[in-house]
Length: 523
Image (cartoon, rainbow, N blue to C red; front, side, top):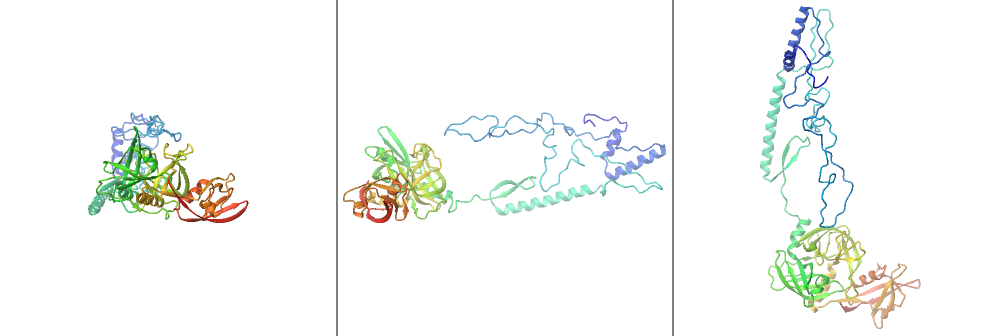
């Protein structure tokens, strides 16, 4: 039957009235129609044959199978073709089909959203399905209940359906309303007792918004938020200016007297005659002076005079760290002060070489992390979840094949272990300078990758006294594997002058152990 066709029937009004009557009244009406037909000698018509009547849809309703006026179907979201890269700070204009923008409307189902068979269906509640449904434009047609005459078999129904009395539905609606009001009152009582701020949520059925309660919790110990709250007052931004050029970095208060720890490369350009300032967490600037520097360890100590209410950072230990632990980096990357990032410990005792020349080259026995570290983070603290500084952020790996601060974060950053920081800071605060340990030999990496090859032994130095010879290959220090010359230098500099270390040496295929007492040099 065409949805746009109105069947011609002289009893249209009667049919519409009949369809609108309760079931019991319809039975009486249909029975009466049959009696009248029997008296007139006419045969009863099966309403299922020939043109069927239907109740016209309400104003504004749309017949099934036809879209509502102006409805073009559900908008299709074009799939993204894959990740795209953008230069930092560059914003790409949106185009159709990219995330964040809807494409042109796609194929329509032919039904408005409220009339699609799947619209409004929720798990746990029975919807009106396509069969036997009461959807718009589909009016149920009741078959007449045939009266049983003498000698006729009992009338049977095609479905074993129990006819409900007309008063049943109003009573059911009333009961549902009462239960709903009771449930709403109970829910309001529960919400009132919680006395908490509210957020909106949905039930599993998705029927209506339900008020849920959650307090915005204070930062707990062991969270990044708690670490940030604890360490931000101790962290500073550092600005170094010399000859019209400037550099920025980070640092943190070592004590209440106003001493600040940072990297040497942050202040080196302004250490002799330049201007150095710190910016505290309240964004106030203060002049600072250099107490001492150690290019070898890439560390420097500054002093800020006249500060009050200084909050020094709590110091921990890197010796207790495990790979996979969460750590937090705090500093001023790209000049953005008080920036907090987090990640994990990616590796320990990573030999790292920084610096662009022999004079400023540093060897770090580094803590590696994937916490975002960028130019400007240098000198800032790397912190564990107990709020203790376990390292000083110093370098990042770049895709260009070097270590430094000219490229952005790629998830490979390095920090100087706090033990080395404390040792160097103590020396600088006591003497204005720091020492580092040496063995008195020049080394190079073995071409076969077996270890660090002794290229030259200096006269009267610890290496000569211990019996080291040219072309010896050092494969371990105190049991720690040595794979090349940087790993040997880093292992040595993890100690202090005066320590005695054991070197495992390969001499012409013969392995031996030699004990060497480390000597100190200023640097």
